[in-house]
Amino acid sequence: MKSSPLLVLAALAASAGAAAADPRPLVVLDPGHGGSNRGAAGTSGIFEKQLTLALARTVRDDLVARGYDVVLTREHDATLTLRQRVAVANRRGADLFVSIHANASAGRVQRGYETFVLTAAGVDVDGRALRSETGTPRAGVDAATALVLDDVERGACQWEAAELAFAIQRELRAVRGGAGDRGVRQDAHHVLLGATMPAVLVEVGFIDHPIEGQELARPATQAAIARALATAISGMLPVDAPP
Image (cartoon, rainbow, N blue to C red):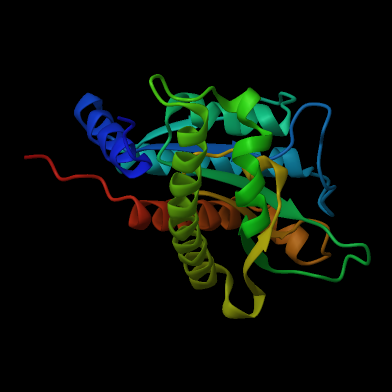
Protein backbone atom coordinates (compact mmCIF):
# COMPACT_ATOMS: atom_id res chain seq x y z
CA MET A 1 0.00 0.00 0.00
CA LYS A 2 1.32 3.43 -0.95
CA SER A 3 1.94 6.00 1.79
CA SER A 4 0.00 9.25 1.63
CA PRO A 5 1.96 12.41 0.70
CA LEU A 6 1.33 13.94 4.12
CA LEU A 7 2.62 10.86 5.94
CA VAL A 8 5.73 10.86 3.77
CA LEU A 9 6.21 14.59 4.48
CA ALA A 10 5.95 13.98 8.23
CA ALA A 11 8.47 11.14 8.06
CA LEU A 12 10.92 13.22 6.06
CA ALA A 13 10.61 16.11 8.50
CA ALA A 14 11.23 13.82 11.45
CA SER A 15 14.30 12.24 9.89
CA ALA A 16 15.70 15.63 8.92
CA GLY A 17 15.31 16.87 12.48
CA ALA A 18 17.02 13.80 13.90
CA ALA A 19 19.91 14.15 11.47
CA ALA A 20 20.58 17.80 12.20
CA ALA A 21 24.01 17.91 13.80
CA ASP A 22 24.66 21.66 13.81
CA PRO A 23 22.14 23.57 15.97
CA ARG A 24 23.08 26.91 14.40
CA PRO A 25 20.60 28.25 11.83
CA LEU A 26 22.11 28.56 8.37
CA VAL A 27 21.50 31.75 6.40
CA VAL A 28 22.60 32.17 2.79
CA LEU A 29 23.16 35.78 1.71
CA ASP A 30 23.28 36.57 -1.98
CA PRO A 31 25.15 39.76 -2.95
CA GLY A 32 23.42 40.69 -6.20
CA HIS A 33 25.34 40.90 -9.48
CA GLY A 34 29.14 40.57 -9.55
CA GLY A 35 31.95 40.06 -12.02
CA SER A 36 30.95 41.04 -15.54
CA ASN A 37 27.47 41.95 -14.30
CA ARG A 38 28.10 45.19 -12.44
CA GLY A 39 24.45 46.06 -11.83
CA ALA A 40 23.20 49.63 -11.54
CA ALA A 41 25.68 52.49 -11.54
CA GLY A 42 25.66 54.76 -8.50
CA THR A 43 25.95 58.54 -8.47
CA SER A 44 29.00 58.28 -6.22
CA GLY A 45 30.97 56.09 -8.64
CA ILE A 46 30.25 52.71 -7.05
CA PHE A 47 28.32 49.94 -8.76
CA GLU A 48 25.56 47.83 -7.35
CA LYS A 49 27.79 44.74 -7.28
CA GLN A 50 30.20 46.53 -4.92
CA LEU A 51 27.49 47.81 -2.59
CA THR A 52 25.74 44.45 -2.31
CA LEU A 53 28.96 42.61 -1.50
CA ALA A 54 29.92 45.16 1.16
CA LEU A 55 26.47 44.86 2.74
CA ALA A 56 26.45 41.06 2.63
CA ARG A 57 29.84 40.85 4.32
CA THR A 58 28.70 43.18 7.10
CA VAL A 59 25.41 41.32 7.60
CA ARG A 60 27.37 38.07 7.75
CA ASP A 61 29.71 39.39 10.43
CA ASP A 62 26.76 40.61 12.48
CA LEU A 63 24.89 37.31 12.21
CA VAL A 64 27.98 35.23 12.98
CA ALA A 65 28.46 37.30 16.13
CA ARG A 66 24.86 36.44 17.06
CA GLY A 67 25.51 32.70 16.68
CA TYR A 68 24.46 32.00 13.09
CA ASP A 69 26.15 30.03 10.36
CA VAL A 70 26.29 32.22 7.25
CA VAL A 71 27.28 31.48 3.66
CA LEU A 72 27.66 34.04 0.88
CA THR A 73 26.87 32.97 -2.68
CA ARG A 74 29.95 34.92 -3.72
CA GLU A 75 32.82 36.07 -1.55
CA HIS A 76 34.50 38.18 -4.23
CA ASP A 77 33.78 39.97 -7.51
CA ALA A 78 32.61 36.81 -9.28
CA THR A 79 30.01 36.21 -11.98
CA LEU A 80 27.22 33.80 -11.05
CA THR A 81 24.02 32.88 -12.82
CA LEU A 82 20.71 33.27 -11.03
CA ARG A 83 20.29 29.50 -10.87
CA GLN A 84 23.73 29.07 -9.31
CA ARG A 85 22.86 31.48 -6.52
CA VAL A 86 19.77 29.70 -5.25
CA ALA A 87 21.46 26.33 -5.85
CA VAL A 88 24.00 27.27 -3.16
CA ALA A 89 21.18 27.67 -0.64
CA ASN A 90 19.45 24.46 -1.69
CA ARG A 91 22.66 22.43 -1.66
CA ARG A 92 23.61 23.65 1.82
CA GLY A 93 20.10 23.15 3.22
CA ALA A 94 19.78 26.80 4.26
CA ASP A 95 17.06 27.96 6.62
CA LEU A 96 16.74 31.35 4.88
CA PHE A 97 17.87 32.89 1.58
CA VAL A 98 18.23 36.67 1.26
CA SER A 99 19.26 38.26 -2.03
CA ILE A 100 20.56 41.82 -1.61
CA HIS A 101 20.22 44.41 -4.38
CA ALA A 102 20.10 48.15 -5.05
CA ASN A 103 17.53 49.80 -7.29
CA ALA A 104 17.69 52.28 -10.16
CA SER A 105 15.11 54.26 -12.13
CA ALA A 106 15.00 55.72 -15.63
CA GLY A 107 14.67 59.32 -14.46
CA ARG A 108 16.86 58.91 -11.38
CA VAL A 109 14.10 60.45 -9.29
CA GLN A 110 12.81 57.45 -7.32
CA ARG A 111 14.10 56.52 -3.90
CA GLY A 112 13.26 54.12 -1.10
CA TYR A 113 13.58 50.46 -0.12
CA GLU A 114 11.37 47.45 -0.79
CA THR A 115 11.39 43.70 -0.26
CA PHE A 116 10.08 41.10 -2.70
CA VAL A 117 8.65 37.60 -2.34
CA LEU A 118 7.68 35.31 -5.19
CA THR A 119 4.28 35.65 -6.82
CA ALA A 120 1.86 32.77 -6.49
CA ALA A 121 2.54 31.99 -10.15
CA GLY A 122 6.26 31.81 -9.47
CA VAL A 123 5.71 29.41 -6.58
CA ASP A 124 3.52 27.23 -8.78
CA VAL A 125 6.04 26.77 -11.59
CA ASP A 126 9.44 26.84 -9.92
CA GLY A 127 9.46 23.31 -8.53
CA ARG A 128 8.59 21.77 -11.87
CA ALA A 129 10.54 24.04 -14.20
CA LEU A 130 13.75 23.99 -12.16
CA ARG A 131 13.69 20.43 -10.86
CA SER A 132 16.44 19.29 -13.21
CA GLU A 133 18.83 21.94 -11.84
CA THR A 134 17.89 22.03 -8.18
CA GLY A 135 17.61 18.34 -7.41
CA THR A 136 15.97 15.02 -8.15
CA PRO A 137 12.96 13.53 -6.33
CA ARG A 138 13.72 12.29 -2.84
CA ALA A 139 14.88 8.70 -2.50
CA GLY A 140 11.97 6.32 -2.06
CA VAL A 141 9.38 8.89 -3.19
CA ASP A 142 7.71 8.54 -6.58
CA ALA A 143 7.57 11.53 -8.94
CA ALA A 144 3.90 12.33 -8.33
CA THR A 145 4.31 12.30 -4.56
CA ALA A 146 7.45 14.43 -4.85
CA LEU A 147 5.48 17.11 -6.68
CA VAL A 148 2.83 17.14 -3.97
CA LEU A 149 5.51 17.44 -1.30
CA ASP A 150 7.11 20.32 -3.18
CA ASP A 151 3.78 22.14 -3.37
CA VAL A 152 3.22 21.75 0.37
CA GLU A 153 6.80 22.71 1.22
CA ARG A 154 6.95 25.76 -1.04
CA GLY A 155 3.52 27.00 0.06
CA ALA A 156 4.61 26.92 3.70
CA CYS A 157 7.84 28.72 2.81
CA GLN A 158 5.90 31.58 1.25
CA TRP A 159 4.18 32.43 4.52
CA GLU A 160 7.56 32.59 6.24
CA ALA A 161 9.08 34.55 3.36
CA ALA A 162 6.33 37.15 3.68
CA GLU A 163 6.92 37.36 7.42
CA LEU A 164 10.65 37.91 6.83
CA ALA A 165 9.93 40.54 4.15
CA PHE A 166 7.72 42.56 6.51
CA ALA A 167 10.36 42.28 9.24
CA ILE A 168 13.03 43.61 6.86
CA GLN A 169 10.83 46.55 5.90
CA ARG A 170 10.14 47.31 9.55
CA GLU A 171 13.82 47.30 10.49
CA LEU A 172 14.84 49.36 7.45
CA ARG A 173 12.13 51.88 8.27
CA ALA A 174 13.63 52.27 11.74
CA VAL A 175 17.02 53.29 10.31
CA ARG A 176 16.07 54.85 6.95
CA GLY A 177 12.79 56.58 7.81
CA GLY A 178 9.19 55.88 6.90
CA ALA A 179 9.10 58.10 3.83
CA GLY A 180 11.21 55.62 1.87
CA ASP A 181 9.16 52.53 2.74
CA ARG A 182 7.93 51.13 -0.60
CA GLY A 183 6.48 48.08 1.11
CA VAL A 184 6.51 44.34 0.52
CA ARG A 185 5.87 43.35 -3.09
CA GLN A 186 5.42 40.22 -5.15
CA ASP A 187 7.30 39.49 -8.34
CA ALA A 188 8.69 36.51 -10.23
CA HIS A 189 12.32 37.34 -9.52
CA HIS A 190 14.33 34.55 -11.11
CA VAL A 191 16.92 34.49 -8.34
CA LEU A 192 14.18 33.27 -5.96
CA LEU A 193 12.86 30.55 -8.28
CA GLY A 194 13.60 27.06 -7.04
CA ALA A 195 14.38 28.02 -3.44
CA THR A 196 13.31 25.30 -1.02
CA MET A 197 13.41 27.62 1.98
CA PRO A 198 11.90 31.08 2.75
CA ALA A 199 13.53 33.41 0.22
CA VAL A 200 13.30 37.16 -0.29
CA LEU A 201 14.96 39.83 -2.41
CA VAL A 202 15.57 43.23 -0.81
CA GLU A 203 16.23 46.44 -2.72
CA VAL A 204 18.00 48.60 -0.13
CA GLY A 205 17.61 51.88 -2.01
CA PHE A 206 18.07 53.66 -5.35
CA ILE A 207 21.78 53.80 -6.01
CA ASP A 208 21.31 56.27 -8.89
CA HIS A 209 19.28 58.84 -6.94
CA PRO A 210 21.32 62.06 -6.52
CA ILE A 211 20.82 62.06 -2.74
CA GLU A 212 20.09 58.47 -1.79
CA GLY A 213 22.88 57.22 -4.03
CA GLN A 214 25.39 59.30 -2.11
CA GLU A 215 23.98 58.06 1.19
CA LEU A 216 24.25 54.39 0.15
CA ALA A 217 27.97 54.87 -0.55
CA ARG A 218 28.65 55.98 3.03
CA PRO A 219 29.99 53.35 5.46
CA ALA A 220 27.67 54.60 8.22
CA THR A 221 24.60 54.09 6.04
CA GLN A 222 25.78 50.66 4.97
CA ALA A 223 26.38 49.68 8.59
CA ALA A 224 22.86 50.79 9.56
CA ILE A 225 21.27 48.88 6.67
CA ALA A 226 23.31 45.75 7.44
CA ARG A 227 22.32 45.92 11.10
CA ALA A 228 18.65 46.23 10.10
CA LEU A 229 18.87 43.18 7.85
CA ALA A 230 20.64 41.14 10.53
CA THR A 231 18.06 42.14 13.13
CA ALA A 232 15.17 41.15 10.86
CA ILE A 233 16.78 37.79 10.09
CA SER A 234 17.58 37.03 13.73
CA GLY A 235 14.04 37.90 14.77
CA MET A 236 12.65 35.54 12.16
CA LEU A 237 15.09 32.73 12.92
CA PRO A 238 16.12 32.86 16.58
CA VAL A 239 19.16 30.96 17.81
CA ASP A 240 18.33 28.35 20.42
CA ALA A 241 19.69 29.20 23.83
CA PRO A 242 22.40 26.79 25.09
CA PRO A 243 21.16 24.21 27.62
